[in-house]
Image 1 (cartoon, rainbow over the protein chains, first blue to last red):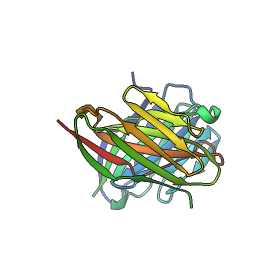
Image 2: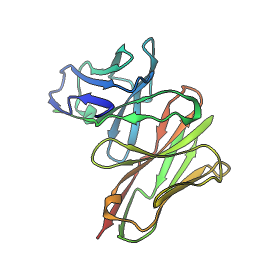
Image 3: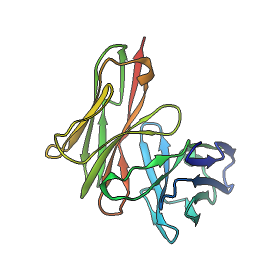
Image 4: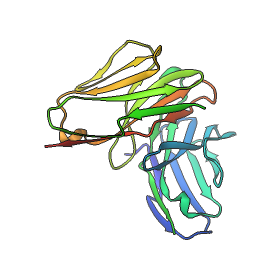
Length: 114
Length: 112
C-alpha cells in the first residue's frame, strides 16, 4: 500500500481554471511538502507545512496556495492556472526527526494547462 | 543563494560499466545531503549523508560526502539496465527545517 497518495494522477485543464491537487499520507508524519518538477530543473519547493497550523512558502509559491486540512492531508491549489504551471507535481511527507529525517514522496500528478 | 549542482546532466553507459555521479553545493547552514533515484514515478530514497568521509553502501551503490570541498559522489558499479533513472541530489539546510534544495538531476541510461 502506498504511504503517500496523490489525486488526480493526471489532469488536463485550460488557462484560467481553478485546480486542486490532493495529497494524503498514512505515515503519521507532521511535515508535508509540495514540489514541482520541470525538465532540467530538478525539484522545486512550492510550499511546506510543519504541522496543521504551520504553513510556509517555498521557493516558487507565486500562483499557488495550500491547505493543511488535517495531519494526513495537504492540498495544493492553482487559483487561475496558466500554461507555465504545466509540470509534474510531487507531494512528500517526513517525520521531522532531526538529521535522520527523510522525505517520502507520492507518485506525482502530471498537470497540463492548455 | 543556496544551490545544488549535479554533473553530468546525462550519461549513457553499457552494462557492467562503473559510473560516478557528482553533486556540489553552496548552502548556508548545511544539515545533510540526500540521494534519490527517480524512474518514471516518485523519487525513492537512496542515501543520507551527514558526516565527511564516511562511505554509505547499498549493494552496488555507494556514496560519500566531502564537507570541506562541498560535494558528494554517488558510485554505481557493474551497472545494469535497471539502474537507468534520474538520480537526484538534495541538500537539507537547518533553517526552514526540513527544506530540501534539489539539484537538476543526472539522467543515467544503461544500454545492454
